[in-house]
Length: 313
Image (tube, rainbow, N blue to C red; front, top):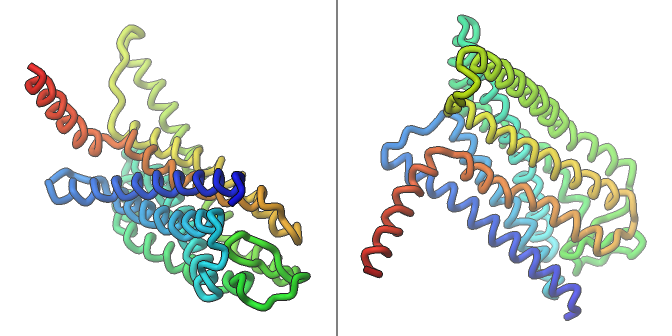
């Protein structure tokens, strides 16, 4: 095994393990806190589905990329390759949709308390379950056509009609059809990105106006404590910014892979790594800003510290 492949394999192994542990830890704590009586926000249901989509994306992309780097090139087979590619696209799409829903519902939640705003909030909260179901349904149906563009490495495909994607082969025939499919698949993503930009701008405007009011009420020497809504909004803004950065870089890499008939191993590896960055970083961003999870960790850390002090004494 070349040292290059060993380094790439270790990178994908580290990214996958860290991402899976982070997402499963966040999901576990949400489930644990719901059983222990901690009051969760309605939008936390979206976070659970976001965690599930991130885990699906990491498992179906990071694991085969890691195995291919370690030399198991014929691991998935034709059906396994198509299935992994399809599930990864679903996980990636639901991750986009869930982040979009999270930002949109949070923008509605922190809107000013007016008569129309209150009615809109109540209606919006009622449609969270339906929105999540619609998100999964749209990406499950939209990505059905994706597996026809990939095949296993053991398949008899003409050399002139394939591109090496490390653990799978991508077909290069019918580029016009592939372009139409790419446009069709990117349509829901573009809508979600547009809604995310609107929601983020709306939240920034509301927070800025709220800060101006607070500064007008309080003296300049007093720094009022931010509300839970403000902290949740700031965490979602960080999450959306992280997502947009990684998604933009991933999309650029995907365009280059689609344009080139024989993309280099470095381009394919970098594209796969960038596509796994958001699912890996997402749970840590949420855990860092989630007050409910923090309330769970702090008593545990205090008890652990006090126990060590008593033991050492």
